[in-house]
Length: 376
Image (cartoon, rainbow, N blue to C red):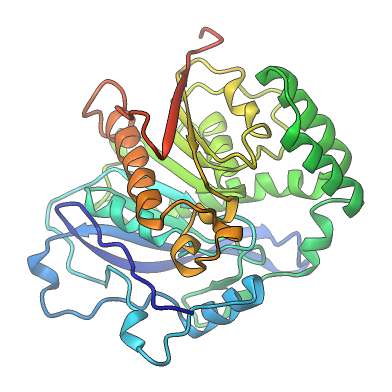
């Protein structure tokens, strides 16, 4: 695999990082008799002067490279140049005394990993946000805990995603080509998931609880660096984007959110979205995410990325440059526009720096605003 040209953070801050593990008080439903543990990574703003002379943090551990290869059949090879395995952040870099920043929580997708969108998280932190990326153990390529243990992806999950598998896959492929109003397409999606996707639907509440456990720990331990008065923003890729949507719909701590190409698996029968939200999608999934555009009292931003594939909405855009997997769009153009979407959205609805995000159509994205279809 060729060398990875990791994008540089564009904000005024350098970025520090550390991890923490929450031993939750709920049983691990996929491993009865054990308790669920939630591993999280924090990215936070620091002064550029404070990291002068420090070594950048490792991008991928040996366990993560192993999990990466198990998932994608290829993995970055850093043996010839170990310095390439350096992220644009610094472990335990000195915090800025007396400074607090708004919090964004991030969720990876199925068979991804906690650091799977590190380039985005680091850039957000460089612009004055604390970002906590939450791992979902057994459902990520590898989840590492602070006691040194690690859990790799539970391959039995693959067989559970659609039951029966053939019928579920065919039904989903048909949905991707279906046409109709947002409401009609959302109803068709619900029909398919209720028939074939009981397992995926059952996982959404667990992912929500992972976030809530990680957030409660942050409230107790990081109030000196996080401004909780502004509420919490949330973003995520794939199933992680679904979790972001659910958190905004169901938890008052969360004030706005973004879904990166995630279909809304789960029972949303009684949910109304009362928070500003952004749905980012590509051609593959444009017609299976329409639940986001129904039953909402605040603006919903629809952002369509051209020449993209689902897996490409992550660091894999740089790490697996196979266009058939990640899309034809140039990686730097993708990253620049993805970061801009997030910064404009969270600067408006989390920091309150502007009335609304300003994102213009260009050669990469097309933006549509879905006005509220319900009143409070």
